[in-house]
Image (cartoon, rainbow, N blue to C red):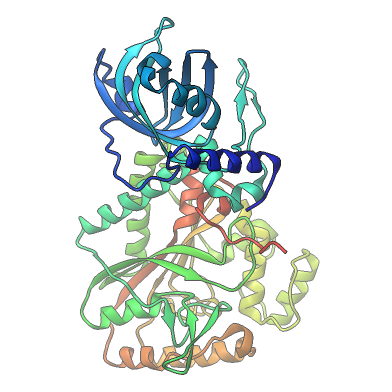
Length: 488
């Protein structure tokens, strides 16, 4: 706890509260039957209410005081008169006037009335301190023109102290309420269509289903190394083998890699798998699903996202945004073009990795309108089926909106012989097992040998989806507790 001057003053007040037998952190239940929204919408003179909230403003006026408290719905004005505490005048003068602070959480019993200025208020008959705040809150003020002063706007402080951010910045709370509603909407949408929500392990013996550096941990009893999952894809496919034909999971995944505006080491993915369908079907499903989301949550969406989604191939996108036709080029030719168009690459990168870098650096951010980028090179898609019509390509698409990948989908590979060959090829491609940990999940191969029905799957980046619908440009704005560097 930081001992600033204000903090020390509040600690002294805490000691005084205990001295006069006022418990600053009581245990008992304090019933609540109303809130700011109900009070405004259902005002009834003299109506008795029980409310609670955090003190945001205090105005001392001699024998009367006004306190404004904030609850989950908004603000409530509380009127406190010494006349209601005539047997406890010292309590009023000492406790109400000297020991209460902005930030304290209080409970009030009283009735509704309107002040001379016609402001709906609660006339306090009883007041209890529920939690003493030992730090000053940022004093956010607005002038008549709507300009904000003394705001809590330092991004590092906001993300480290999200609890303070939520107290003082109402728009931040709106973002997270929207997140909760969107996830609930998606869950209901899928459940009504008979999809089964399942759970798969977070601790995995092999970090399969994607290529990423995992977080590593150790289980003492089993004397084994485990990894925080980088994907739940292989487990969900095993469930399809077992006969569950429509499954999904909101998966908390972990990747021990960089942090930027669209990447956080811990993130949420919606993984969805459907038997007897292909990626063409999934494109139609995705477009319909997004239009439903737009109608429900996005005013901007009604104008832009609701339009017909575009569809272009991976190599068409490369040609549009680089001017080069890369379809039939060999690795050395692609590497030369990377140098010409200033794409940052590594000497060890192979053909698929080079193409991926070109797309990421030169194409993705320029794709604004909802666009399905389809038919990726087979080298970039180790878990997708080979294209049934086009040699060298896979049945895969990515959905790009406003320059960000929102979803990734395949016609899922279910040939165990081909899948094993692809895994082995990936290990050679990423020949740094200690950093990439792209190991072969032999149990997954075994499950395919029992027979997985033809299917399609998709992964939606939930955090990026929330960014899109709340108009945020940084993933940290849609996470309650984003990862931050530890303070020294």
